[in-house]
Length: 113
Image (cartoon, rainbow, N blue to C red; front, side, top):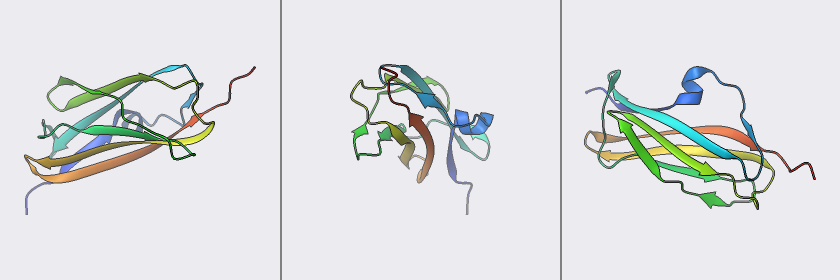
């Protein structure tokens, strides 16, 4: 059996602690895709989904930076529910024939006013 596709969230790889955002704040989340520790571009590209504690989902556009490197920019909606959110990078690839998913928690804090 060959090596499997892996997707890794950059914040998880860097050992960043729990990130906290406020409604209206911008974000950039990044990830890499590899096979046998070599950066690769799976087909189709990875997708990111954000899920809030109230079930709200947001699917920001994922940009391709270079081979195996991706990011998604966005703004936390002003209507975002406070609490723990999950961001999910998912890749259901046909090339290589494999799938990979990683989930990272972050927090949306209530506005101060």
